[in-house]
View 1: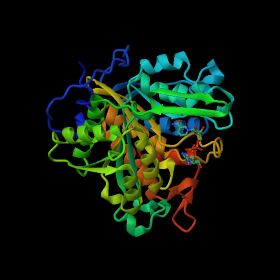
View 2 (view 1 turned 120 degrees about the vertical axis):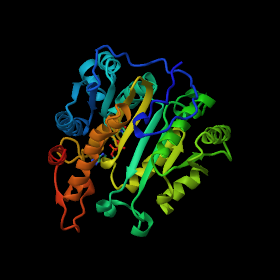
View 3 (view 1 turned 90 degrees about the vertical axis):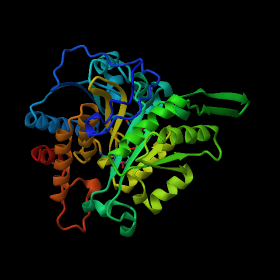
View 4 (view 1 turned 135 degrees about the vertical axis):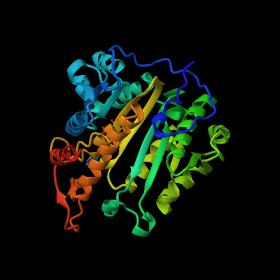
Length: 404
Ligand code: NAD
């Protein structure tokens, strides 16, 4: 039996909790190279659109961290998405998947191109064939999306200043491998001439809810100690089970306050009083929607990193790290993309997969310095701010790497 979540946050000063054992995740990545605690094998899958541009800057920053903290990152790049289809006929080429299996963690850009996606069958399209496949393959059941609005970027938040209070700082914890996106049956059928019926199925089991609830409570323990669990218990059977199980798990964390909120109210409260939230715990589809709504509060998708965590093995937690946004074809190839989301995703990797908190802090600080010094990519630029200087993807990456 593998204890799936006990290793998470190990290095964040958590006290021992009652041990609860979960269903084992069988698809553990195989670590084939002998490794010291300062050597890390990383798969870098840049993907499509702005993916390669922002990945280049993230690797630049990791190289600076490597030097400063005497670490070794063996970074191997491989194609995925349309880059995978063009190179090897599949959105997730076999060699790319094999590389991921041999790696300690995956750094991912983004995949999919709206003008090319409709030209191939749905199941072969990059988001389904690569992204969803990787999540399932590596048992990435927990998605963590920190949403932070630095005070210098208050202008890019769509809410009035008084609704932002002292700044927004929310962690959305989303269940990633269950619910409606994976439940069976899932199909579209012809029921009569001219009438089709589409079926998606929402399914959750007790262990699936337990393990994601533990992630949320542990995260809240080292934050502001509050979990808001999102469900639709007034309508859905899944919601009733979700609420029951989260309540039971919550009793194991007496230092963390738990509140339940219906998803429709949660969507509204995010706009009315976002500062009431610390950790928002959501099932897959509600988390998908609410994490994007929360993301809008930070002003740009270009600022938002994301971590997807799988099993813990020894001191390391296998993780998949990516920006919250997509391939942004409207700005791809023009040195316009904001690389900060991709760069901050490397900080999440150092923190959550490898427990390298000092190195992760150095990236967070360097990003803060670049913002404080007035550097802005187009998505966060405010012409009214006389101290702001518009820069490109590369220049932002250079400044952050330089500040490490
Ligand atoms: P998108 O996130 O790519 O773009 C939405 C808007 O946000 C655009 O205006 C874009 O320019 C902007 N944006 C996103 N990231 C940015 C950054 N780093 N810097 C500056 N601006 C940024 O969403 P979309 O347009 O709906 O989707 C485009 C493609 O990406 C689609 O094919 C979609 O399927 C795919 N997609 C992939 C992922 C993923 O791989 N995880 C996620 C979402 C969308």
